[in-house]
Image (cartoon, rainbow, N blue to C red):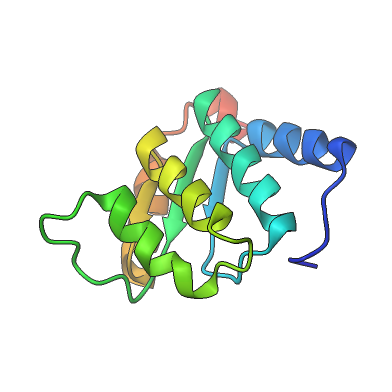
Length: 124
């Protein structure tokens, strides 16, 4: 559940799974304290080379607002962790997560990523 705490063992297992998969898609969900730990795991996986996409349909064009700040404002309405969720989302953007604002954009990004996977990684 989004509001349940994630144990340290659960966080470690999640991080390992994200790192091994090498790809993480963060969907637009309500963010409770339990999800914040998972967003931190995604940030840590990103730091070790995993690719992370933030799928945020409906995010308005940030204009001159820095993307991390625009994401934090956009996420705030579904952040039930007293700002920690919006902050974790902004941290992901600062760390290099890729933003997709529509399903076609996300699919195109994933397709491009799949064509760049070395044969060994793709299981060939």
